[in-house]
Length: 435
Image 1 (cartoon, rainbow, N blue to C red):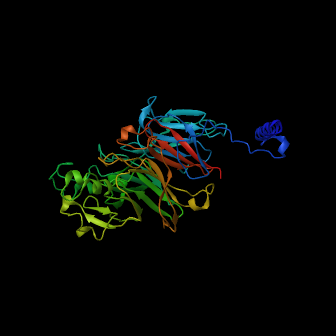
Image 2 (image 1 turned 135 degrees about the vertical axis):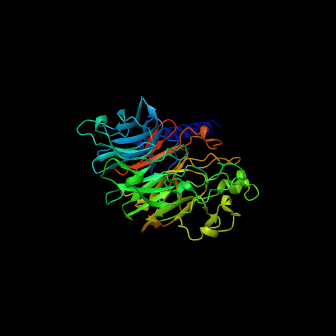
Image 3 (image 1 turned 90 degrees about the horizontal axis):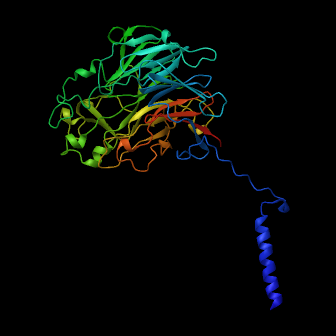
């Protein structure tokens, strides 16, 4: 019995020794080192394998769109003033991905911001202006050098954001949203019909083109209506690969609330589509008379104009989207990935920030993510997918006010990383690929 007990105890001791030294020198093998935790990383953002979200800044203010300079400096238009200013400027001085300097300038809040031909262009809800880019160690431009580029836009309280982009031929494009849901005689009122013709189409609900290098232009005196019938295109971007203008449109609301006899709650939560469009001069996408039904794959006559949820009527010949997303997820920015730092599947594709819905109740709200659309020859070449998720910070969003973060601005830096800005507190992420 003693022999058996001794052998049993000896085997236990050897097993324990082997376990304790399984990664030690006695085995002749080195255990793989665990990657140290990086305080810059935000593990709550769900990304495809190989990608990491670094926190550039935590709370710069309610961010809208982003512009990135060739040296990596970030400029972010703010929705509300921070420290009495409307634009944030961020600089990473040591290359670790986090902003070491954050400064503020500008006397207007708004949404649009872009860099073009040596100038920083910003937009308020009524005008577009520009600054010469600062030189040397300076991060922010001189306020005295700000110049008006285009103004005279309608004063409106709904869909007022003037988002901007530039083509390769010296043109500036400005989104002017339609200031209503469906141009009803009595706004968002059951039983009210739509105005026909809709007077808002004259100076709103479309994209206007200006001279990118001229100053003191007005919409009525110098602007050209490039495309019409677009309710609100906060996401607006020129694609240099396709040499064409693109946008993602916010669709109309409240089909079930206004017309419960035609649409149930689930249909109203899905319809109409958020339309991804490729714009050519003269295009007419049909708002407010029409909307795109992605379930039937066609333009449908709006009920305010006699539609029955099935009939196309006057909408049959309207311009069509290149891709249709589910309704009410609020596309707020668009950027084309012309860099090469990400895997090949992302090259020349489109990233779209979906700000998140408010009107899908009683169903949960949707959106609050960044989507990716593969592109080839200027058209989608595959199914869209969610690229960055859980940005809201909670699994189920019952109301937008519950979301801790909402993606609003996108930009691609000189190193090929995608930047995402949040409109709640102004968190900024830099998404890098580590393979």
